[in-house]
Image 1 (cartoon, rainbow, N blue to C red):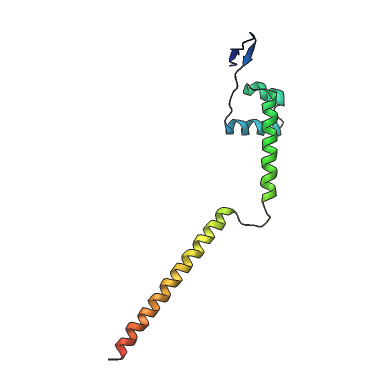
Image 2: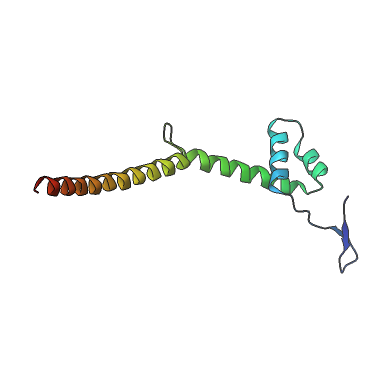
Length: 114
């Protein structure tokens, strides 16, 4: 599974392996569940241990940023967008009803003047 490449000095060097985000997530989950050690995770994935350390650090930083941005009891952004769209629709329909009420008043008013 390990691919190697000869360097100009004649030494063999492992080619870099790119992990998908889902693979990185699975590795991270295995480590937090303590199913594997960092060395085992690196060996299983065919990457260097520094890659595993990087995955842990990115996951930690991302989780901390997400937790810092979240506010207890605050609605999610998707829900806020839905609410804003619903309020805009209510405003539009309210204006349409007002216009129709004015037109109806004018039509009925003119009919009564004959």
